[in-house]
Image (cartoon, rainbow, N blue to C red; front, side):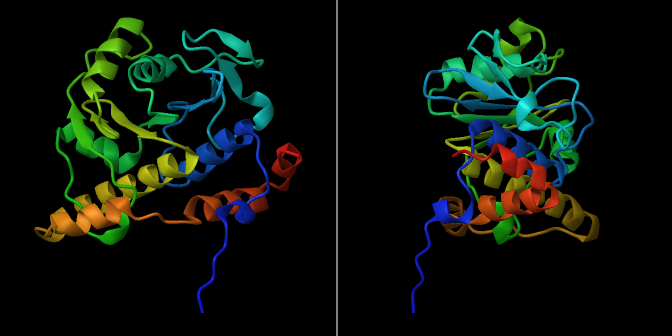
Length: 243
């Protein structure tokens, strides 16, 4: 018997502000937890963006704290300023109209590989989920809170879906929340597993055709399952679901 379940039935209707909160909290548990560092942008149909607030941790802010900004970083809604480094996102969004969600942070294992200026091999199937073009970006000559440096970094990212920013951290893009989430989770696992395997010997990377298949696979329900966990842990967030 084949069961067909729409992923729309796996979560209550959600506002984009709540999506940003749940993305931040799910990724915090995956190692995207470098204190106050990190920023998320979620593009809206009118060309504005929802982003996480500065001064609040990723596992702390609520939908009431989410900030709405324009493409130049001007605050349109919200009581907090956006993170200074969000300039990197905005410069990338100016160049990449295919990107609706962008995530930057300094997750533990991805940052190790970024600092080593190496792309980790993909050794297992979970690590290959989400796919995407991976690049090393040797851009770091200062913080991307500086608009000029953010612009240089965004141009260096080019058409990459996942960028290891040398001496800095990780930048991941997606066409929606679910794709960005899967890429973030899978790539940090890829970095962790590759690092650990190097400690015991040389791993064998998955064959290119296998990697291609995994990259194109849709892990339906994954984002929804992780988001539901956060809603269970903090039921107060249900007050922000869309009606």
